[in-house]
Amino acid sequence: MHGRVKVKSTAQQEEEKRKEREKKLKAFVSARDAVLRKRSAGEHDEEALQLTQQLLSSNPDFATLWNYRREVLLQLETSREKDEVQKLYESELHFIEACLKVNPKSYGCWHHRSWVNTRLPQPDWTRELGLCDRCLSLDERNFHCWDYRRVVVKESGVSVEQELQFTDRLIGSNFSNYSSWHYRSTLLPQLHPQPAPDSIHSHRVCEEQLLKEYELAHNAFFTDPNDQSAWFYYRWLLGRGVCVCSLCLSQAQSEGLMLVLDGQPQQVEWRSTHPRLRHSPVWLCDLPPGSVSDISNEHNLTVHWTEKYTHRDCALYTGCAESWCRDSATDQELFRSELSVEKSSVLQAELQSCNQLLELEPQNKWCLLTIILLMRALDPLGHEKETLAHFQTLKEVDPMRSSYYSDLCSKFLIENTILKMEYAEVRVFSLSNKNLTTLCHLDQLLLVTHINLSSNQLLRLPPQFAMLQCLEVLEADDNAIESLEGLYHLPKLEEVSLRNNRILFAIQSKCFIRNPFSAFRASAWFDLVSRSQYSSLINSYRLCRIMEGQQI
Image (cartoon, rainbow, N blue to C red):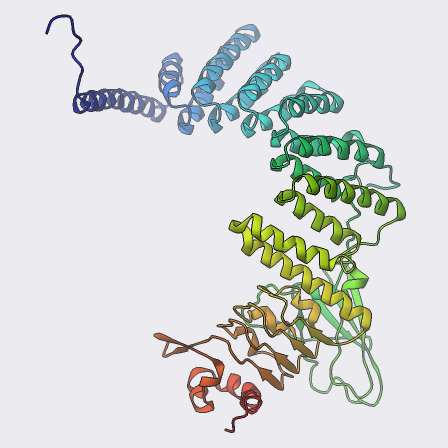
């Protein structure tokens, strides 16, 4: 009919688009081949610049073309005067800016722009800073631009204070600007460092500025409690405490360890507690035969860590056949640091502020998690009950991360129990019926003789469980344990109870049987484990069967 526009079918449109793509691809491939031929022939002329410009204008991520373009520019630079070189590279900057409009996050573009500014006789850093401002106004999380801005700031001499004010503007316009919060965390220690007689704590921020930063973070997460950017920055602020660095032998690798017995160096072979642990926090060795001829006297042992020029002393006491060199978690302040009155009052004030927000937003996961961390910094044992309640709420409001919260809760419970155990100076560790999902800090349980892990949600006894070298009694009933890998290398283990688990054994490495532990007989075990494993566990197996009221 007259006067009506013919509408193309979808098939026709797709066919035309396909032909158009093929046409562009042929032109691109033809130009690419021409460029590569010129580079192979060693031709560095104006035509090469034109060809690479044609290709990079449509695809700025072609790294080989940027490399070739730099080769051409360096060649042209040798035959031109200083003013001409300035114009050549200024023209290059304009071209790069056009490419950035095609892809603002092109690695090649930003790298090439940094290189061009190093070749410019008179770089205009003010213009470059303005380019960064424009790019960040379009995409505030363009990390390529943030990295380039740091280079520009360093070269142009922009003060740290000016950059901090720049982050003020960006954060003020959008609290969700994570990149600005992060950049701010790198500037504060430079502008407001805590006075110290040495450079050990140069990363810390002075207390006066910290209080201002707390207020800034409060404004952000009280305005939008669900935005994570301010919460991460707040966590960083709260972590500005003293970092205690100390050596513990159990944290070393075997390389560089040397044993001295009564002033005489000994040739010993260090080993981890499990064959799979090539990097271990616990290392063992046997004294050479005949090195200790008189066991009725005490002997002095020193372990030197030659790589760090330090050592630890321990003793082989009278009548003992072994010696352990270990620092307690309390002495090392592994799980909490001693706080001054001033710092405690600051953290208490922050905890109060978060509790006020929690009253307004009772299901805010960031607030709940921050409260838990503040409680642990202040008094992990005193706040244990509240912490467990908050973890339960976290699992309900954020079910997608419930496994993470369960593991974190398990970690905190184990840390608390280690602290209680060391305060009481006992070697018994009990965490039954605590809903544990994972085991951690096992190197801190090196001297434990009795451990109760019954009625939890553990899936395995990992290789790290072999660090419990003094363990004599293990109770782990009513879990979901499928693997006993860490159980085969405990030399002092005498009693084991593993009822109501899902022990997983391999038969001829082809199939698996999943049954309660009590379903296996000693004769069946012998076919499934090595003779050494069998001999070390058969007594435990008998006792486990006796615990069930059965006889072998």
